[in-house]
Length: 210
Length: 259
Image 1: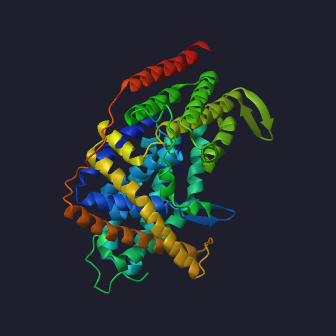
Image 2: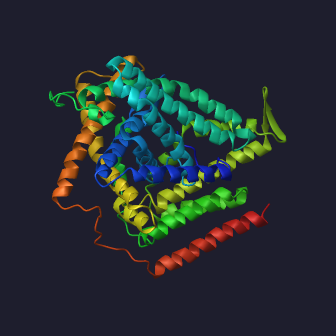
Image 3: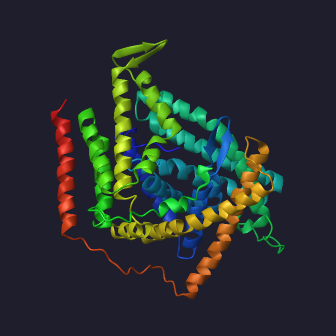
């Protein structure tokens, strides 16, 4: 979800912008000329993935997949997800201008954190255990996002506290969905292209199928 | 399904029609949109905010934004934002103006919700009008010249360039899934399939990235994108800047004088 302009307190907006600039600086440092094309294509992939809708009851939710972005990109997930949010704001009007920093931190910071925490166990363990870690990464990233959005709202005033609680509750089903989807994606990556998760390349049976 | 429409097509809708705004330097338009957002966020009175929304609507009209799709964009606000706006009148402490069952609606809460709705819509509309109608390549070069790091601008270029390509790839995979009678439902099978789908998109994107990098190396890519047409700041950028400052100042003036 995107917070819109005008809802948050000035201090929260500025704090979010400062954190976002810091995260971008660290993320950009890991991007040399050779990694920019791959990161750009993956940023585009996660943009496209957010168009996938999962039906939930009479409505539907779209995928966010920031956990998987963190697993595949590490710190580079910060600029990659920022670019996605920037394009969404500019060309689709989702989110806003002044809240771009807060929205970026809410999506990208949990991505980077689960990427750092879950990548090593996914690499080391058996496929089944790795899938569980993938679920932890996918669900954990959404939990982090919900928590950061709730904190940003709650810090903006007494009146927003019920809305902050609503955010936490509303993200529980999304958390479950993203956990399962991310687990499946991790299983596929481990089999088809393990080097994306920092593992040794798969034996040469190829990636032509699927 | 409307959601499955490829996003890249939307990124490509550059305003073909010539208008006073399209003659402005992209940098001027970015800075104006940003300044507008910062000023409008700080406004509190309904009078000033209504005036800001009118300004945004007029700019959108000047930029010849497609009326129908823009209205749809503004109306399809996040469900959560809508829920929050509905909740705020009841959760803000203040003088009561209405009681619905156990809930009391406060005038200060209603005021808060209204100002947020006005701010959000005015800023998004102004952004779509001034920046959203830019060609992505122009946007990237303008950001570079406004001091955004080169690596970030290049990342933006690659992302914009490949959203459409990967969107087509995604639609192809969805067609293959449909041919095998896949239908999205709220089930474990759907979620697992979507996981494989996203994973496959990531695999194909990274393999394409390897080919792209090799091809760019072959052509002597050295990390810079040469620009043929460097737009320069001209007199009407100055005129537009002065007008923008005057309009923003009048917004603040309205805020201060009308209570």
